[in-house]
Length: 270
Ligand SMILES: [Zn+2]
Image (tube, rainbow, N blue to C red):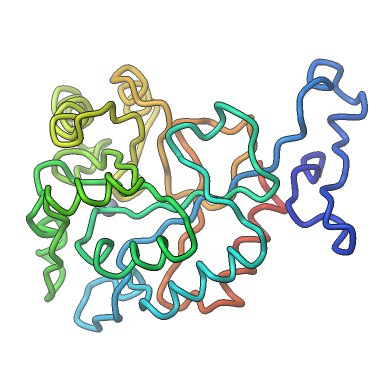
């Protein structure tokens, strides 16, 4: 792998990142650039005890496990970076982006205190028409309904450094929408969330991980700078900024599995 350069775990004893092949003249155009480590983006949904009635029990990460994962990242020297300006400046040697899909209330109750304890920031993707509501898009299949963050909880989390991105107006399956509806879901959610947050919303997350070249084009045209997919892996600086890969952290991602997934993604980043 030519991109092993940015691997945060170089020779273990020195703690230094090994020198990049790309920085040794293999590609003259990039020799002046700092070697850039691949960025793993963690994808969480619910930080709460697993509810077996849920249609997707894997989407829960119990609070104690989440706390342990954050402490392990911190102990290993990972530094949380903002998705909103991911590749805008030099990255720390061991960057990590932490994201939460759907904007569940349990983010504020269970995840935020654990993030605060280690000084990490995160990005939460909100379903703009369901602020203070519930996960209505899941109700047909699920026997449990989850509360979503209220505007007050969102503002409080924003005040302590949480970033928010769009997950459309209604958790829409975008490639299945006609063009006008897809545009409305993408662009109107941005405007709506900017009204709540009082600042630009530049990050996006495709509901169900579903996208297409047309959808991607609309996300770009609407003014988003970074968009997350559900494709697995970490991201090099050459990654498609509007189709960023992520690492799905699930209820069964107990700490060794979590670390294995994380380190493997960085090792084989594209
Ligand atoms: Zn979602």
